[in-house]
Image (cartoon, rainbow, N blue to C red; front, side, top):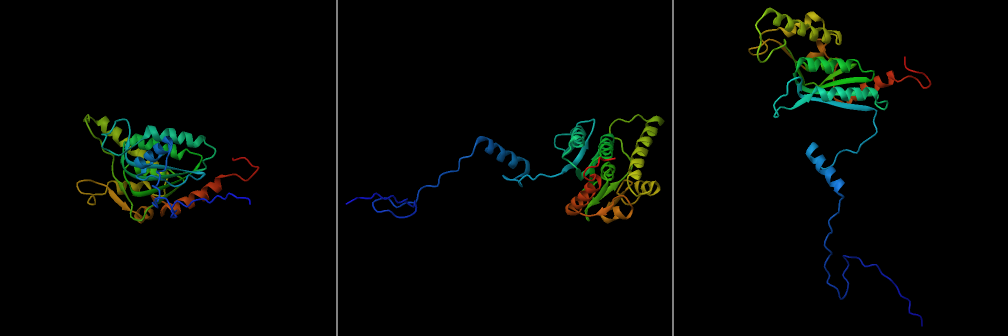
Length: 261
């Protein structure tokens, strides 16, 4: 008589005679040091341990938030966007053939005039399709940045403050100082009016309007108001901005077999 040996896989949760019928302790999942480091980085950066899976995209997103920092370093407690960080990114975007479009999201109180103009001038000169979206606020020098793209959007409740240039710190009270300030202001006005549908007369009128801002001159435009005066192209959000950017990308991509002009 042949004794056939049989093997039965034991279920760890099935009672087995002669054994302590206790479920095994759950073993901790071991993670590599690299994965643990990535989880900690995500937790520090975005407040959660996981992020959306990366997807191959022809659109690059650039965020301009807080105060635009220029030649002077702002206090550490200030949330800033440094123009010396933005400009190299824009150069890399221009040189990257895989990037076809750039979405610029703004939520800024303004900042250094020359730094903001430098960013706006770089955006305006890109060969890629560009779209801007103002969320929350795009104030002061954020206005030229928002209009420097091919098309601009603003959220329904977002605001834009238009006001004259201001100087901080020590000012030499001579006529040349005020002439320099006036020329700087003209640079901003000409850039905005040449990259939007608003006229120079209307923009100056909004800039020097009294009675709307307490102890100051200027105008606050909310959402559709910015569109109605011709400063921003359309009221919309993320979905509209991405849809428009994809349309602009298709217009800029030459037909197969043809070189761009």
